[in-house]
Picture 1: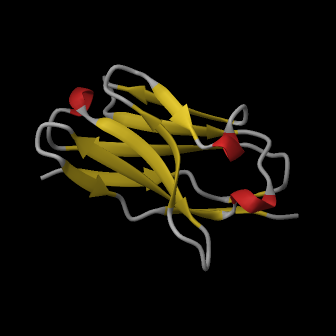
Picture 2: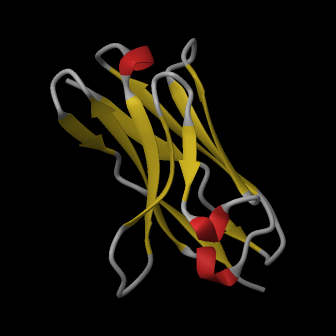
Length: 117
């Protein structure tokens, strides 16, 4: 069974930075496609950033140039470095793990990011 645990959420001032981490256990980490999603109050969950097993990345337009997704296959961990944070980045951030072989998705419990002065 795949388990997904996010960490790193916090309260930060506008313009600040945070790094979220997502530790994945179970299965073969290196073959998973990975992503970060977020859900703000009253809004639908949206994809923020993704990285394939080959290392290809993509981002939603609103975070391009500010957020960076990366993965460490030796540590079974995916990261989201968030810089120049804005109040509109406030949300619960979720890590997603997708297996192209089983077509199954796995989610973590989420970590709260609040950007406020």
